[in-house]
Length: 407
Image 1: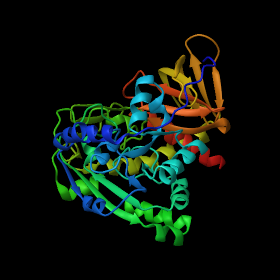
Image 2: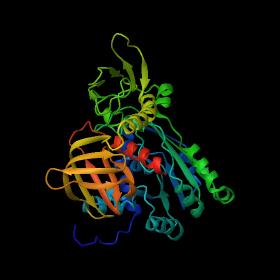
Image 3: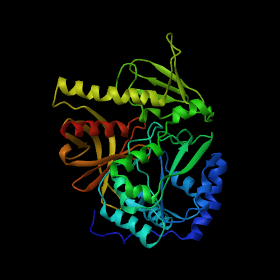
């Protein structure tokens, strides 16, 4: 990996560059995604410093939200996005503040405090820590409330509706429909002083709560793309009918299980209709996701009860990269990645197996659409799957379940 450290990273967010982005990229996004806004009039009387706090559904969320904020926004972003020289320089000039996902980072807090108190700027925080997998707001990271308590500046909550269906996390292709962006002040400095950290967290959760499927049921916005369902199996990896893992496949608007044959057809409103002689059942992505949240842990429990030392599941042909902080990732090994109740094993094409005890693994997450990441001894490992149907979310959910058994 070498001993060369990258130059010290300092975010810089010039107003002139922000204006250029708003009138070029921002204008394109407004037209491309038919963006409507509500509540932007609050910026007529609001002066920095303050915090922007949106729900998170896609990589371009910051660009969409920032297009309607008059001041430059310093967004807290995963350090995984800043590992290439090009991306690091680009994200630096738009004021991105790097943070390791789900890992405490004192440097990030210091930078945020500096932007708020010394620069009098605007900081953007995604309190879920990662983009939604099924269109429903994820649980918020509790430390977000502690940071808000520390900063004691106005909090502007932002809810994006229609953005998940326009840019599903599981798809490589965007769709044309409609996006609504709602701005509202959820906390004032006075309220922050009076409320406890727990009360602040509860207020933040309520302010950005959103269910895309529920919104679509009322809004009835059609979304257009020929291959609407393709790659849905990276999120819904367990068959809702037979419970098999990794057997779901998609093509065009069809979503089916290769093990039991159950099949669904997706319409322009993201509803899945079950086919076959007993067809007619209509479900949403959120419905199947909630079912999977219950059935997948049961699958793991049953497998562990049958044989505690057995492999729970594995994926062949993975490419593993590794690195630290903002250093570029380097190719590490290629082989089969296997999960056991107490460890992750990497069985490379050549050489001996590598073992990562789960007691030493932390910060697991999904980067971008479908790359699985975890930290071991403060080193980041990123897993890329050769098979597009393989699911990084499957690994994330399994590790969180196993870590929960020993918590």
